[in-house]
Length: 140
Image 1 (tube, one colour):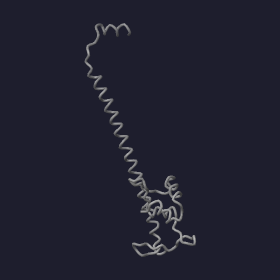
Image 2 (cartoon, rainbow, N blue to C red; image 1 turned 120 degrees about the horizontal axis):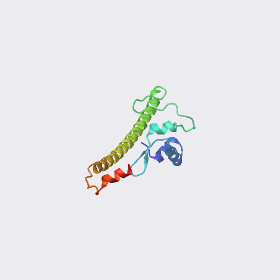
Image 3 (tube, one colour; image 1 turned 90 degrees about the vertical axis):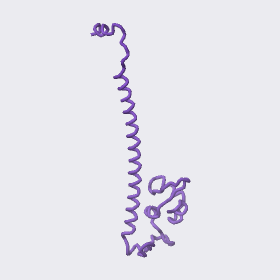
């Protein structure tokens, strides 16, 4: 995981550009408890392809876990992109489930309030004023 400064150095851009990409949603990053951002390398290189010193795209990136190059393992880049997408979708699903849970709790609280009010009205056994039946006969 990269900090914003490390990500900017790796991508060959400024920290402000990384910040703007995060804020616009183009680059996903995880906000830490201390307020800093943590950026996954696969996500960074999805948005900012890795470049070599002469400015061209780096063609033969070696995967540390397999020792294969991008030319011999084209699945690696696609897999990394898919893993990022899956992680983002899981985060989105978690936020949606949390919002649904809060809405359901609010509706249950409102329902319980209406239920209590209905029970109070149905069990209201106060004595009626004298002659209350004649009031209804006159108005009918």
